[in-house]
Length: 144
Image (tube, rainbow, N blue to C red):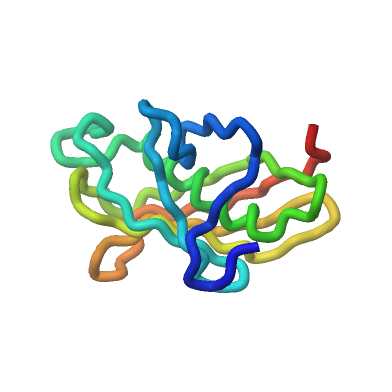
């Protein structure tokens, strides 16, 4: 598994994930780095094509970004033969997220039990202000 400071490389076979696949031309191609035992971060400037109101990232796209961040954090702890899928994702929009400016996407596993990963996420600006936060539950399931 990745060490702290290394890029998190998923091994999911035919990875065609819209968020993290590096092979999908129409995807976001997000690259996460492990920043702690249970934490990942990605620096990303959201393209203008994903805006809602002028200059602001669409709220649905923010949900996609945070779903990727919490999922990548949970991925750090997957056991062999176990995957996880998002069971719930709750966002709090605190401040507008600007398009075409670098932000940090963060995911951190806060707890784990037999059935679920409990994960917090955030979109953070260059001043380290949380713009949007998320609380998620990712359900464990056997890999196919």
